[in-house]
Image 1 (cartoon, rainbow, N blue to C red):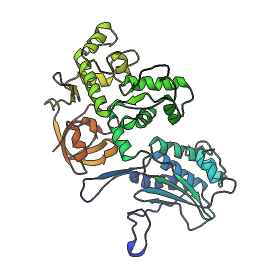
Image 2 (tube, rainbow, N blue to C red):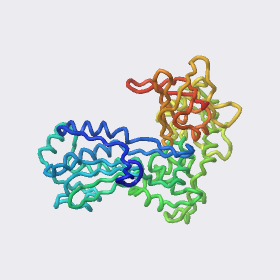
Image 3 (cartoon, helix red, strand yellow):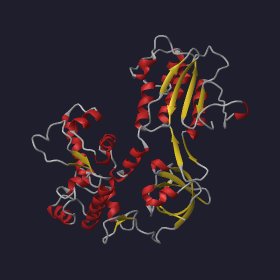
Length: 423
């Protein structure tokens, strides 16, 4: 659908209209095949300077489809299940009003309320593996949408239809997204992201505020969360830990600004590069070498090894993980210059041929896409593999790039691209 409303007459705005018919299994499989291409697409404005990625979670859409096929009123003839995909939302219209024993309120509160209109259809779909537990479909739809950090679906019912609406609208504002993007190299969990957002723009945080925002019950969970963020160099105590300031309600924690956090991380990466490669990062000499290379104010100065573990560079047994070995391998995808505190990719080597291709698919706000070379082969690309990270904002569909084939090789998946450069 071109726009946010269905028009008629001269303004009719339906771009594509597919009809799937057959038995229930044929409808499910055919409808899913027709629907999947619409779950992720990139829309460009005429000037090609601004772009918006429109993404709907696959699990939420599949559950919505199964729910519609399973629970529609088949006594209503001539009225199909309809998927209406607008610029800002997806509406799924299922013939037949909600059964009288089920309340919209209960569905929205995810109570697992259910009643099968078509008992045999539901049983067949469950036995074939399309459905799991009865009453869990709506819960899975909401859970999937929330995992993608989108606003909750809307559920409604009138005399003739039951409607589920999925929105492509982030729970985060543009400023929230911009702030979080500054911490992309720290691989924050969902809870860690929420704390970072809570402390956006220098706001002081209290223990009470963090606990209430995340719904934490056990204070040990709060301490573990704080410890992870502290070791990642992101949160710190802005006020002395006096008896007064230890009170839960007193704001005393602060989130380190993204630019400052990135500078300290780059310094730690440089230190790791200069002491490695080693089998384990647990010896006293290794710890001392790391500390000696960190500035006095570095949040990693006291416990550099535990900080590297929190950041995903080493394992629980202090053995190097791929993030560390990539740093140590100067001929690989990323290296740390000995003469600077900024992480910089190595230029292409002659060992691997340089390819030239065109960007054929792009999801800007998730940092990935695909490059296609002459002959049709596609390569997976990620923002971290750009030689110049600022080129990401200049990329668009059709952009020409050079790259080398990466080491990623997963059966059935595209090869990866590394050392990508925009032409």
